Length: 139
Image (tube, rainbow, N blue to C red; front, side, top):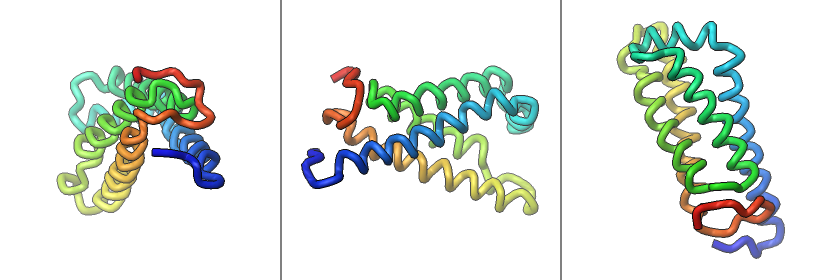
């Protein structure tokens, strides 16, 4: 993958900032709104709801920032893709909730799936040098 087309490097950076920024902000919300998120995680049957909320919040913040910086892209994009697919299925199971909750859960499910698609796209480019990055990585 090359970023030789005019503006491609800048668009890729903009995409990273938007994608990573939204996910980092979402992770921050896990800490700021834990009083609502922990009972939700408990209602979904997670065995350690507080640990799940704080752990997933940390994953989102750290991975989102790493995507923005272009640091460790394999780890960051892989962690995000894995988390987003897993949380879509376990936390937003619209097929298993009462009818009055189905639309909200389906919206959250589809949001996670779409974001996972973005994470997989970034993962596919993780072996390429990212423009405007700090240049830290496994490859």
